[in-house]
Length: 298
Length: 228
Figure 1 (cartoon, helix red, strand yellow):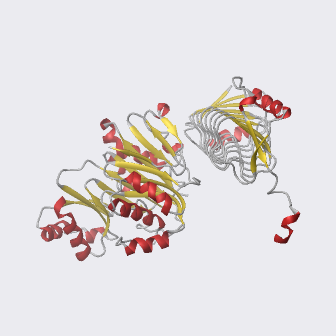
Figure 2: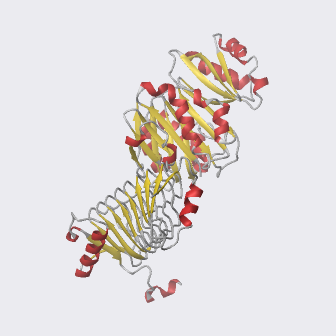
Figure 3: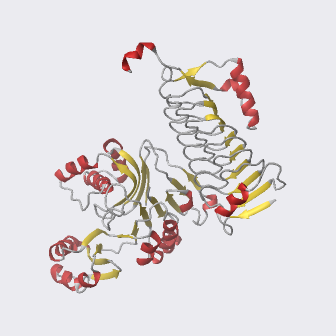
């Protein structure tokens, strides 16, 4: 089944409430995906700084002294903010690749969940409200957020199998559905140099979009192309640094509701997810059409 | 009038109160407040009462309805009035996928748009949609009427049996074995009665086209005997 929520804020005054509103939306989708949950939050980018979200099964050991070790490797200041099993490493943007390499080489048990100017990604196995609380989602601020509650079908219930999947800088994807040609597509994408962390079908969709965007397409164009190349059931919600996209497959079995006001664009697998948003009574609420790309950019 | 606020009363309590009502009950007027997209609101009602729902509902609202009039002042999620037996269900906003699926009787009136698979496998229900309907509507529809004042999406009436479809706007494409058919006087009459029942007074039956089964798919053809 799975549940998806997304919030793309248009009115700056709502940005401080991004986490609180997203947490409220996510909590309504627990029954749709009780086995794990995750979310990507796009905060205000700090000029010249990059953020790398890390995860460890043993955070006490792995994150201890990590900032110092990275600073030594990149020869620049690095800050580590620990949140439960995750940590966000902030370092100069021009040193981000170096920092990632240093972590991969020196700390094999640490996983890189995502990186970019503004994205932070948190995901874990557990009941969605517990996961949200663990990372204090309600206190987060920013411009847009995408959340997912997972009921696993295609691969194991693990942290890395939870959504969102991030396969490129400031990019993330969540998926409700199941793809049927993901094994072939994974092979083709690997051949073109894409790397994968899991056997999950949704990660292939994320990597596919990254691969398309690497070819110079924008998110909207990449989503259009995916209609030709992805086979299966899907409702996708996708985030980039400045953008927010929604796409359903041509059969459109997987539910989706969009709402838009002057203040925000919101996505929910069901209307329940949107019922608590400010001004929802007067919002334009509609069901996205099948095989139609919806795409907002700041 | 009994007013139930779903912020204060559980859905199970509401539905259980509705299920206790029998024919001849004096409690004929019900109002439901703050549904906030909850599933299965007023499912399985079996009494001649009126339930007015103030707000949008989730999956399966008014499913299996018998005798009751249920009015949703908002939009409705997937499976609205699924398997309705009789009575009347009105959605003032839009309805999601498979509204009126497998319905056996009664009237489902959707004042906004209905999305995909509206009236899938309908078995006698009458559905009137003032807006548009999505793809694969009336798939395997067996009997009853589907009236659409707006447009229909792809593959209308795929594998249809004997349901009658009337569409006023454009049909994006017809499904397998569904064809346009002549509007004879009895069809104008039936359509006119349905529009009246739905309270639609500003359109003429001559504005509609009728669609139904070519009867080549579900009937046995002796020329195909070798295939069995």
